[in-house]
Length: 266
Image (cartoon, rainbow, N blue to C red; front, side, top):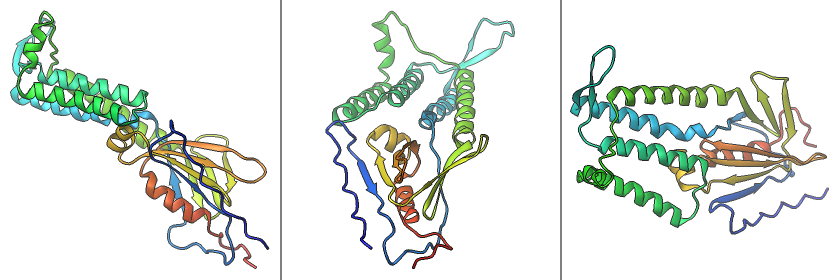
């Protein structure tokens, strides 16, 4: 019996990612490989809220700094309470810049060295001006349109963001996952009509980890995974924002090339 020749790696175009890897998996050849060690791998696709953790982390830091260094300010309200407010603009500017950059990074793909330099330059300039205490001088040019948030504003917004982020990443995104076993790929849903299974022999894997800020800095080495099935019906399955995609692809390649237990290898 002839061995199937392995598929050729597709060449990425100029506009494709800087780190795009195509991993074709050939059908199992003789002698067959029997599975050992880990026999099941689960792959979870996450929403873009995965990358929003800096918003609540920085918010809690700003709330703590306001608690330690803030000054009591009387704000007109029915309860007549004193609110803690940081005396300068530094905390407000840093927090608003963090929120703005997260919105930009999660909605626009930042590719190329020039885009990265612009974002890093803006962040560095903000921190340097804050360290030198020059933001108050900058806002004087704009008729003192300053940025101040109370400790409660930092705390409650960060708490809402943390709860939303936690539930999305660890609950809602896990209601649907892909399970890889020797020679088979199965889509399982916690609530739904069942599951879909695919024969993994000859399946191709394509890894995209091109956005340095989204995938490396905010996503802890995450990336997008494209799976091309083989057989009578060819399908492309797109799994976005898969955590630890490098190790996941290596493990999946090993599993789907193995022969399941009970299959005659003669």
